[in-house]
Amino acid sequence: MSLTVTFGWWVVPAVITIGTFGRAAMIPAEPKGGDYSFPDPMPFIRFGLAAIFSLAAWLVWALAA
Image (cartoon, rainbow, N blue to C red; front, top):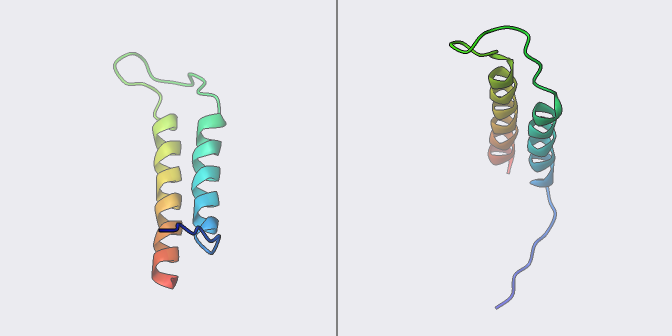
C-alpha cells in the first residue's frame, strides 16, 4: 500500500483559507463599542467573511476540478 500526495490545484483554496483565517485572527480585537450585554461584533464579522471567502474558494475548486 502506498500513499501519494500530489500538489495540485487544491493548494490554491488551501492558501486562501489559511490566509483569510490567519488575517482574521491577527487583527487585534480592540474594544470599539458594545458592552457586556452586546459585545463588539467586528470579530464575528471578520470570522464570517473569512468563512465565506474560504467556502467560496473551495466551491470554485470543487466545480472546476
